[in-house]
Length: 321
Image (cartoon, rainbow, N blue to C red):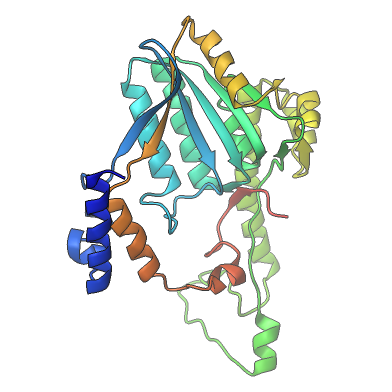
């Protein structure tokens, strides 16, 4: 470890001992995101020359929320990486590695739109490489690719939308607990966990799910050039293996990340290129922010997530067994 990193570590330990917080040092996340400590490095993986093939990674649940181990939410990090690709004329192709069960509808759609914008503005190929799982929202993103690689054992599919509500009305009745909602309209407390869901409320939620589902079908039809009737047949929420997905036209080729990268190079028209990745820099700021998120965690045991599964109810393009 070089002197700079040792210095950063010593300062972090000192801050921890003094009980200082990121807010007191930097003024919170809004300032932190623009702080010089928040930086992305470009790392060369292999290759030669001046042209570049960029490998981007979508790992874990697709979300606009910041995790305890990340300085910025996934959507913001990917947006920044895609912005760099857009501005770098040396980038001749992108390989999107997806290992994700999907996630939030809005977050997934935002990333998908950025991928389509990249194709429109730079007109460079995007090759998708599926990992062990590329389901639901993970597949939604894959439709932006020109070619999709998968392993025969990849779990994909789960094409659809889910909206989960937790209800504990029977439990609170047994405990003698009463809740009262003073509301401005009939549906203001729609989905309240303290009372049973009504049929009109169920209809409202189902309408939202149906709208998001139709958008999912649309991106598959447009991205994969499949007949809409065919997509409606296969998009019933079930999961597929990579082998099955290839037979259905959801996947193009079998291969790993290296195979997808080599194919991206062939599509780029370049004889050789550097294969690069974007990585978060190790810095004082990122270490402080990570520590702060742990100090300020209001739910250290994760009980809230256990009860609500994913926090507040939201539409999800996500495989949820």
